[in-house]
Length: 632
Image (cartoon, rainbow, N blue to C red; front, side, top):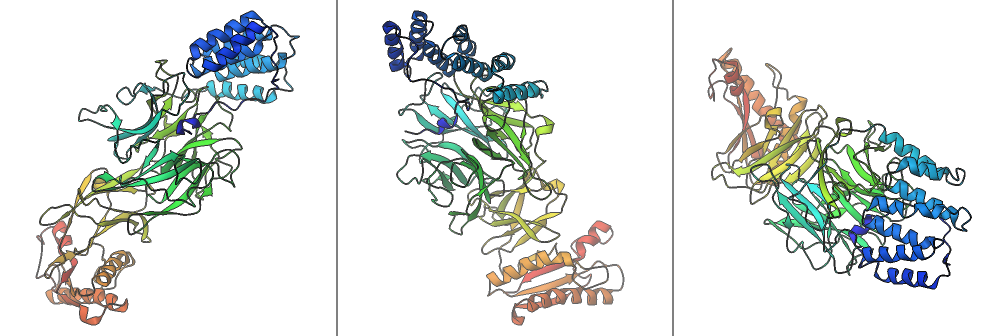
């Protein structure tokens, strides 16, 4: 049975010429060798003893030393992984001397002994030039370390392999994948189980002990590499070898309904293929999914791909044809575990196709001014090591990172999740979030409503979501572009609402009070503007005017009146006339855009209906307004 954990592969090795024929004729040595092979999967330590005993019987039997070294690698006993190979290069006349040098050089490189590896690669500089280049690059990266303080997430990690970390946008929920039953030094078996675990940040700031999410997410089969949408309503996971799968591993999704996850759905093509899809990462706007795939059309091995995501009216998802991210991201080897940060501009992922510290290193890329990915850069040492760094994610603030590693603590637990400071040079762009709680204005009951974030200068909708009907909560990413943004809220049977996004309402919960659309209900049109002493609608009014049009078209039986109001400064007669003209300007806009004349009217009241004192500028600003009133 295939396992998601199989993506934690060995380093791409140099090709060596290994003969199928042993280098010994010693029957006892061969007998010990074969016995070791039989038990290596279940009892690697005993197998090592037998391999070393076989090598001791005949020092020409280098294959036994090679096998012992491989098992030491599995057990993360790096010094012994190298030590057992050193004697194999003493006999320069051995027919497999070149292979022995390559094995030893590679083992030194794999264990971070770059200087020693370089020495052995230089035994055959012409044949082993790629190895020499790898060592030089690793030594150069190591000579420029970055600040790094990894801490084992003790409440999160358990006795089994823990990997694929994920942290929510608000930093309060943490999830990861656990290979239940898989312990250090043993390969994944068919009776091991991959499950998704979750933890919550407690009131004291500490993480609670993680536990399985539970059914229907937890099944008798394997699922993992989870990614959640910003609003927490969609979970993407990977499952392998299921009867509905198109390939070896497919991407599935589940929807949260009434605070419960639904059964996983395999969306089929074009997201999934007959190849291998894994490690999905949904962007903050919920409209792009990044993932790794070995499908045709890539650059080689597994590549990073992206497709568009469409939320259908029934809550299901549709996916566009995936697009390869190209040569600035992908290589002829393998790229894995993409993570698109909530800034939508910074991508982190792992690759073994770009020379670095060895194994899978973490790289990052940013979009340039043309919305194209720049050439990926190594995040540096000691964040990257000679081991495999995969499953790298960054919190919304961009100052902390989370990843899995199998050798930082030497605690015998295999892969664990770590949290670390992220150097400023590696950080994504600053991201703000608007968090809303949509409620009924009178009953204060939570409402399910459509919420859109749009850019004011051109009315471009940047993102949208639906508030949770149980809690009323919604969350939207606010791009850090320097532009002005606002949000629209619509709910069936309610007046629409439009407000500006400001520094004071980002990063905290904002109650959005929705008024029932009943006769007599009124709404101040905060986004309708006129120049001083003018009744000509300004360009920036078109966004809210569009909202009014949509409201009237979606509610064809509603009749409304637009009311104009002014402050008390100046002539009452002129103010009344100006307010009347302004109200009728909005009315005429509606008629010109398809609303029947008998459904809209306009009237000005000048300074007669103040809502605040006219003795202050703040009060006068509130009194200068246009209102929408439902007539019937």
